[in-house]
Length: 258
Image 1 (cartoon, one colour):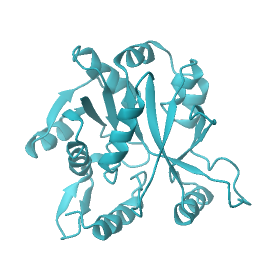
Image 2 (spheres, one colour; image 1 turned 120 degrees about the horizontal axis):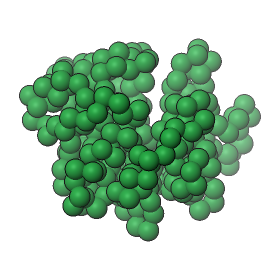
Image 3 (cartoon, one colour; image 1 turned 180 degrees about the vertical axis):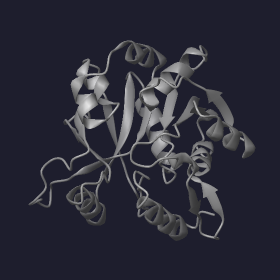
């Protein structure tokens, strides 16, 4: 069994107050982004606990109101992985910590299950999704407009991550039929010891430049296992910018999520 942690902060550079943003579901019901992310975590069969980790009382009070377990964490956490590391120090019994991003309410439970299964013998694992033509166009269009539309992953033949970027990698101006761009799903499963080491390392130049927390593992020689998952016809998109709200609401309606 795994402990799912949903890191949430109110101060977001690209989208202030993002966890409290409201999203309308298929039946017109509005729920906050953090509530929809928590519900996605609760749907994972392997979840022993689902914890919202935050340093903000507004998020904490809101999360408790819809029934979530909340753990207050330091305002000094640089990213969600540092927040997960803090939670792990308070849960010595935890064997596996899953970081479910609070801006990814469309994450299917089987994505989480696949990553949990892949941590056997690994320090950490994260899912990647082969971008279909529509997703690739969105990624490219957002970057052309100077927005971050998502993160891409480049990995080796055995699934070991080579790099993650907010640019669309590899260069994809002329993709062949056997080529692929992989959209990184913002989800991680870690062994507690890997989190303890992460918290001791300073932020490296690649993490600072890209703003991607997982690069700290690569910069310190820790293998990150990329696990390919399948969309099975469903849309996966994160809320990175205010413009993404409409995209996610459309997907909620298409998927029949209340």
